[in-house]
Structure formats: structure tokens, C-alpha cells
Image (cartoon, rainbow, N blue to C red; front, side, top):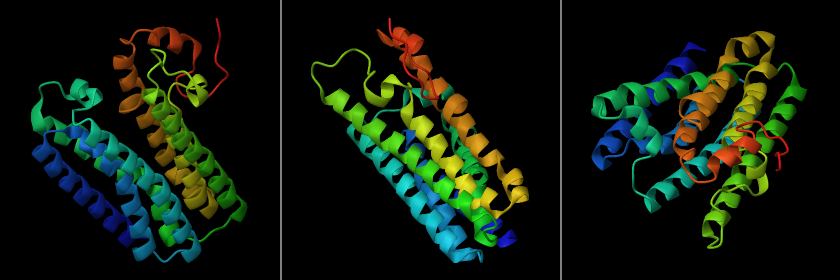
Amino acid sequence: MILVLVVSFAVAAAAMTVTALVARRVGRVSVVDVTWGAGFILMALVALLVGDGDLWRRWLLLVLVALWGGRLAWHILKRQLAHPAEDPRYAAMLGDGGFGLAVRKVFGVQGLAIWVISAPLQVAGFSSVEYLPLVWVGVALWLVGLVFESVGDAQLAAYKADPDREPVMDRGLWGWTRHPNYFGDACVWWGLWLIGALASGCLPGLLTVVAPLAMTYFLVFATGARLLEKTMMARPGYPEYAARTPMFFPLPPKRP
């Protein structure tokens, strides 16, 4: 158990150190968003290689995390290559604080967050399945999350490619929630918690519930929806869109 925890922490710290060096070189803190998805793949890989829990579940988690994290990292990398400018969220968060502030408020925090949120993966690395049905419930919830993310991103890309588009994207999933990708992320990590932690027993589930709670907090309040909303509210039509569409949890939109 200790070995999995220690190696996971060291790998998360190393990943963020490399990311900080790259960010300083290219002059953009937002490269950390690429590492966010890739970092969890590293955590699942550590659980597989270092752990001694049920082998089939360690492989299952690696595949699920790799599909989610790989898609997310590639999607963000393509966006950053196409638009090589700092993310307004990080610019607003850091102001004129310089690189030292970025190390403390972004790279350090996100490195620690990767280690904490990956707790279900670490538990699966050294434990056995006690409640098998919860594994498959978790897989179903993970799938719901991945569909929300991938379909939401595809719908947004189609909207941006439409020359006759409306000022605000409110089609498809975006008519049910203002942030289907963030909601999808939350579903993915509650599903992984079910698979890796709660399926191992009530105590592992209770001790690691901070993981999906922390991920949900980040998605809604820290670096996710709330921070993005501050800039989006300045766009024409967005306040009206916000008044009729839930911010996070999908619900039928209110119509005038």
C-alpha cells in the first residue's frame, strides 16, 4: 500500500515539475491542462505496475482512465496549438504575480490534486473487489461522463465552424447545461471512485470519497465553470443564456 502511495506522489510531482519547466519556456501556464488528463493516466499506470490488487481491475481502470485522459489531453493540446495564447482563466487568477505565483497556485495545487483525486486508482492498486456490481455501475457512470464530454466537444466544434451561428452556443447538450464537458468529467470520476474504491468496501470508499468531491469542486468552483463564467458573462447574449440554462447539472432549458 505505502509503495503505491509514495510512487504515485513522486510521479505526480515529477509530471508537474516538467510541466512547469515547459510552461516557463513557452510562456503559457495553460499547458498544465494537457498534463491534467495525462497525469491521471500515469497514476493508473503506477497502480498497475506497482500494485498487487486484482489484476483485471487494475487493467480496467488503466483502460478507462487512458480513454478519458488521452482524449482530454489531445483535445486540449490541439486547441492550444491552434490558439497559442494564455487561457483567460489563468490570466485572471495570476494577474501580475509572475511564475513563482503560478508554481504555488497552479502547478503545485494541480499536482497535489492529481495525487488526491487518483486515490481510487491507488486503492485499486492494493485491494480486492468486494462488491462486483458496483464495478459495473461505475463503468456505466463513466460511460455517461465520456459521452457528455465527447458529444459536447463535437457539438461545440460544429457550432464554431458554422458561419451563421448565433452569438451563444445553446444547441444539443449545451441547451441542457452550460458546461457539459465539466459535468461529464464529474461523472467519469464518480464512476472511477465506484470502481476503484467503493467496490473494495465501505471503508475504502469512505476514506477516498474526497477524490470525486475534490474533482467536482475543481470543475465547478476552482479552475472550472465558475472561473470561466466570469469571462463568458461579458459576451453578448450569455447572461440571457445563463438565465435559462443550468450551469452544471443538466436540466431541460427554460424557454421564453
